[in-house]
Amino acid sequence: MSLYNKSTQFKNWVFTNEQLKQSREECNNETKKKILEKTPTHEPNILSTEEELQLIHYYESKALEFSNALNLPEKVSATAIIYIKRFYLKNSVMAYNPKLIMFTCLFLACKTEDNHLDIDYYTGVIKTSAADIISLEVVILESLKFNLIIYHPFRSLYAFILDISDNTNLYNNSQPIKFDTLWDTSKKLIQKTLFSDLSFYYHPAIIALACLSLNFENFNL
Image (tube, rainbow, N blue to C red; front, side, top):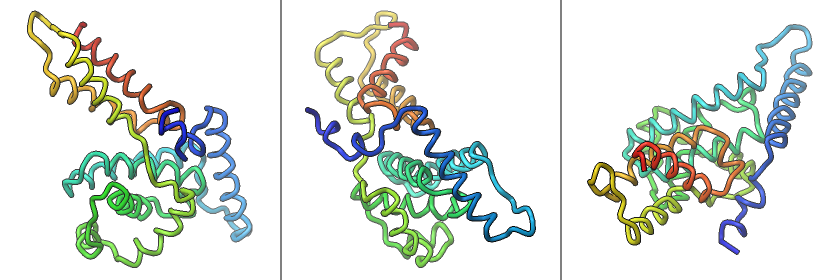
């Protein structure tokens, strides 16, 4: 059995489409109920499940932007994006500011992926207080069930391409396709999948293989 199949990611964070939809709707409905109980005399600004999801996707993209601005490795931004997704399966953007959650998830991802940043430097760059980040860390960790190790498709993709390069001659218009070219173009496809729900459905190797297959079509192989 692979390490992935023994992982908390496989045990706790893989869903069917219906399970994922139900989890989001339950979270949204529960938050609506709490808000209405506190403000029964007027109609507050309540978001639908779809509107919440749009905001979550927006801040996933912002996590990538800030990660690039800080010159962080791609695995850090990828892990932060997954943290954001998981957090908002258990919580609502109406209860927790998505901007602060995004910043805190990115900071946690730096720790998980062994790319530590000084918190004073980090909060200076993102223009927020260290107290905001520290206060949300425990909340996020609890929501993630302290399942911090993320299996991404990048490692599987690297292994697939390395195996192809070692055992097969790939040609396009009589010119060999270089490892770096195939890696870079396939990796971009994987990065796009981070903004979808695929990580909740499929084994990382399956996602990597699908992106590699799509890339082969682009090369007309």
